[in-house]
Image (cartoon, rainbow, N blue to C red; front, side, top):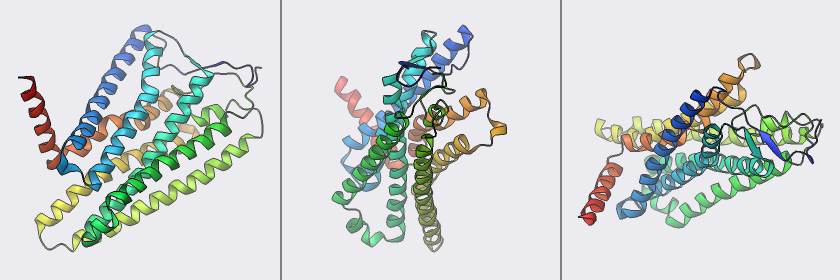
Length: 311
């Protein structure tokens, strides 16, 4: 059996072996990828262009769109290329890079979603202190902390995962490089180090999740005390998109990693992986713009300005 020093490439799990279905997978992923590029690109451009959107909430939303663009760009183009050229191969270095970038961007996104729940908590529960607690410098520091924490978290996991001796072949049971599937190729008890890191990570993730839940409990109590129905509706409207994004992010990720072994078979694993790694970056822009009138108005002005310049 090969060891890690002799492995130069990994074999990714294809969605199908039928050529026609491979091309269908390519076009489906291309559509999802273009939708993600368009949606997140419009959000980034609109927020950067419109001065009225230079507020903490939209600053964090811009960072979220950047992370979504990065995460989907890390795995989807390679999967599309493999389907188009009928191959399963990814190089050893390419796999390590893909793993590092995906874990970095996804973990940073979860930390950012935690910060965004704090933003909504301060905006609704402590509106008089909003400018003090969430000034421009504080927002930059919090966003930078999310990116830096995700970077260090991913660096630690990637270095530890690829330092393990691999002697159970090079076939991954996933359409992109993922830590659990690489650990399955290890023949060393050193993988317990990675399991220890995963336990610590689970504790950090659980802590962030508890923070989000507590924030929204406080938000709900504050909203229910608002006397006017219009005020309650406006408060709920600002929180609902973030709550939906968090629910989608957490539910799909938890189900993908904690589903019982009896429910684990290749086709379901691939479907669940798509749900937590590909779908959220594509639908998040739609979720955030659907009920956000400020963003809709700014986007309309941006499009009108663009067409006026073309005439």
